[in-house]
Amino acid sequence: MNEINENTASTYLAHHYGEIKEEINELSMRKNFAGIFQAIVNHINLLLSKGQIEKIGTKIKFIGWLHKRGNEYVQYIIENLFVRSFEGMKRRCTTEQWIYMYQLIPNNLKHVYQLQNTNYLTQKTSL
Image (cartoon, rainbow, N blue to C red; front, top):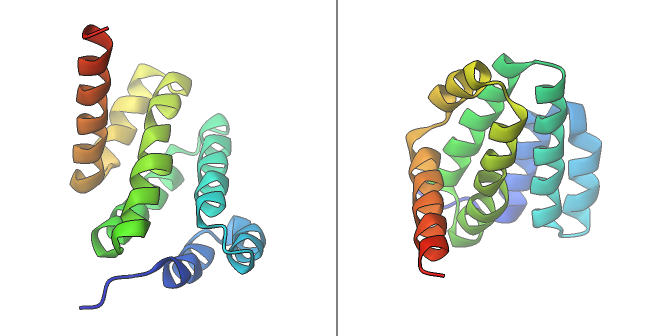
């Protein structure tokens, strides 16, 4: 199976994130894949502020699917922009919302999130 590159991923993302499709297409035309993920993070934060947790779960599951099938660059952007945004989402949620949302995060993204937090804590304690 071929890995998904950023161009194909951009097309999938525009389809899956219909609410911000135009923004994704514009950023894709400019070859700004990182910008696409920043737009997605902003969109998810907007959904969170509106209390639309169920929609967020669906969106995160799709990113997990894309991470599994993406090439190295796609995975890198997802890990360093999208997964790193989980900590900010956690701060914006109530405890109950975060517990619910965390259960919806695919295992591959949970693993990356846990590694990032372990590395952060290790670095912080060694200072």
